[in-house]
Length: 218
Image (cartoon, rainbow, N blue to C red; front, side, top):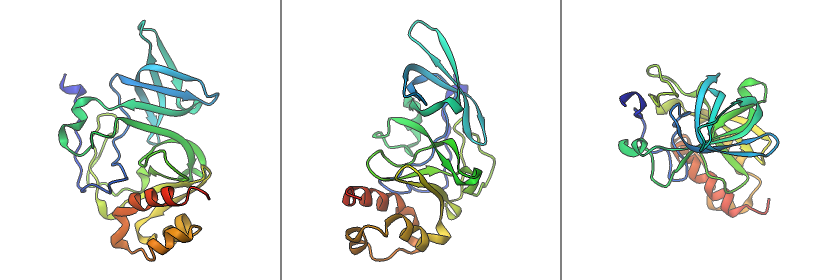
């Protein structure tokens, strides 16, 4: 049973109230569903079989009658896996987070090739942040499939997507540019948040949540 337990080693405190920490694909059976490129929803027990460039490449869905369907990641729009209870034992994952979500979005690291990336912000507005594995400085090797993750918070970056299409790499060292690009089109937000510095980086998720709430008309 130990092979199925979730081990999460994080060197960071909570990134922000509105921003989740990355967990990674779950390789054990867990409740969930997938949505295909044709918008068909398939529900059942879902596990990730393999990853390519940190993106789910092989997904297996097991139905109630134990029938298994193997699906290529390139054929999916979304993967949702319910977090097992053991995942909350570290205290790093809030109970309000029920699923690990992977969405197909343009990845600037791969010439905007659509890839399944882990979503770190909620579904509530124009801006979303996704895990950027290539931008996280590794203190030691980590493995998504076994939930082993060790990172250095000083070098975080994200794939930021606005209006479902405008994707770019958001880096801590470029927070002024990121700030303007994500939020500059909303005067109300800018009045409430006139500046942003590198010290505000871990609050990026909160800023995204504020923008999504205040600027829904854009």
